[in-house]
Amino acid sequence: LRNKIKEYTKYQGQITLKSKQLEDEIKFLSDNENCPTCKQVIDENFKTSAISEKNTHLDELKEGLVKLEEQMAEVNQQI
Image (tube, rainbow, N blue to C red; front, side, top):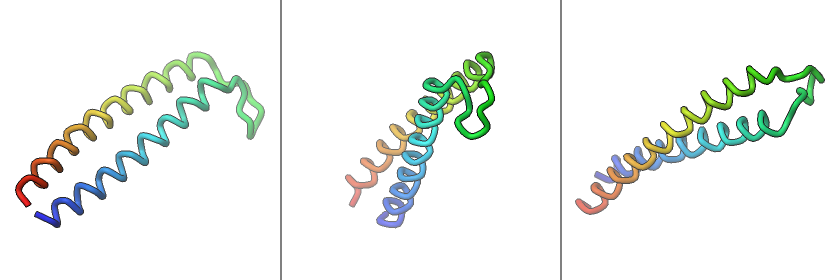
């Protein structure tokens, strides 16, 4: 059971990291009209589509994190 907790904790960290990355990408796309590196205009259709996809993925990750935390609580009760 302790191995499961370690495994779940590892997954929790990975999900949290990926969620933070997606939030940063969404913020970048929301805040910028031009790419700071190449100075090209970021197409509005691309921004809208990318933000939508990233928000969907972020929602899925958050749902997964809730389920994972529920499983962790169950295992903790068994210990």
